[in-house]
Image (tube, helix red, strand yellow):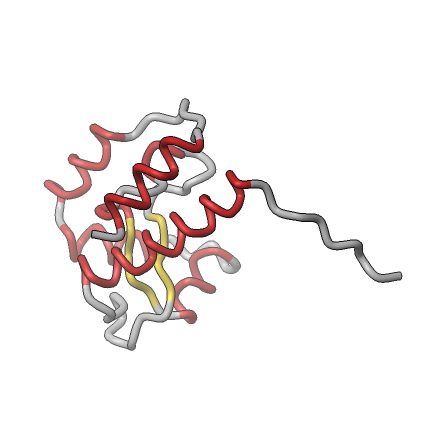
Length: 121
């Protein structure tokens, strides 16, 4: 049986747009080369967006990564990916992320719109 399509809410549409703007911003900020040296095709949240929603649209939390490294990290639970990222970016970068890390945030439509404006500059 075919799934019935449901119309997306304004918040869902804004979230998709903000996510896309973040992806583009990560490549603009960090380039498009993965930590392994291959061309990056995806952007990885160093701190997971579900656990730390306050860092969801923070460009310094984004890491350009190739599909292979992303797969190793998320499907094979390979910790070496985060070790390479930390070694590459340094302890100062990690300390900066730690300061911003908090997990209690709920995105409003206004906040999505503000993030989109900021990221699409």
